[in-house]
Length: 479
Image (cartoon, rainbow, N blue to C red; front, side, top):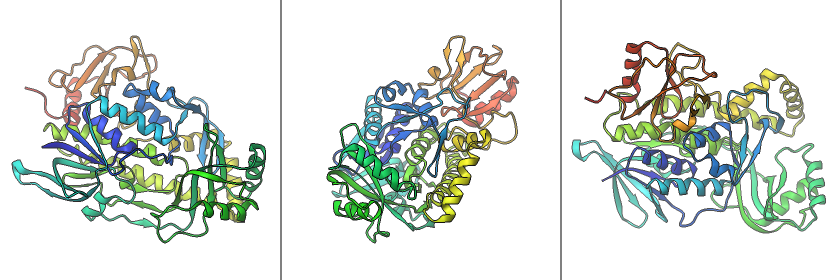
């Protein structure tokens, strides 16, 4: 039997597959599309996602094909320089098209031994929990069936897995819609830039970004909300809306791909039903303002992977797998709220224009800029582990050690005890947790216990206290 089936081969599903393979889990990814898509809805990685790639030793691959950016906030069309001294060793984002991100994550998953089946569409599922026969049966569009111990739906906003589970997806429907696509322009670049600069003075959901291959990434408000959201817009739809807002269609032609997105915000009521879980857009949808969607999905996978692997191996402590929803659902809810606020700022009415001007002035205050940047980049995420040290529940940024860097020690996806005292031990958990005896001028704590996702699970120097936290996060000690 397969250990885990992942429905959906986008960034979330591929990241999850790679994380599971680090722990030897037999994972099969089912992707509906026979070939990788050219559509690039996600345009980059924020700082926290950059950290994840560094923690797993693949950041160099992304740096080789992308450019760094440091635009603070990226909030509702308000862009400011990043604040100084952000709490990260990677104070930048990476501009990288989604197809490139998918290619690199696909390569990573395959290298680690994941099985990726393209042209396989999941159309049904059932699950049982009958002792040795416990598991999930999935039905494919061609009539075949597969059996696994667990299933994770990473199959997008219209998730078949979520619908089959009957999980509610409450929220607000789309009120406005935006057209997005890549195409060529008949006008010269100077004219295109001048036209779009003029329109953007009053209409923020409007733009044309030159691409390396000479095409343009065009965004323009749609004429209402389409009844059939699955049918892509036509080139004539783009021309019509360009003429409506700019007075010219700029000679657009030869589209590479065309799509639409709305401002609907919805979140799954539950991220887990028995042996089936949801991640990425299958668990939450929101407008792409702030560029958070792809990043949040990858971060969902990073949180879930090691927990599900422990469950598969039969060594997960009680409640570990359920902590996935407890930790990630609030992060999703907060993101939905901030995108709602951004869509208000992006409005073209006088009230929205005045609000955007006020918010721009507020972003000039260092504390406001730092708060917004931390929220959008997700470096401020703190899970609720109870009262304690200020680091508790936060992800640990990369720090320099006397022998290398912290993140260099985390490539294997294991827990890690960074011990500056030299008096502690992970005996009984050495098969799951690395013990690094080293010191850092950047760490004001005697020792920290890090989960595989880099979040701080314990801070201190008491040996008995450490034993309790090792058992809480990594299960019983080996006999």
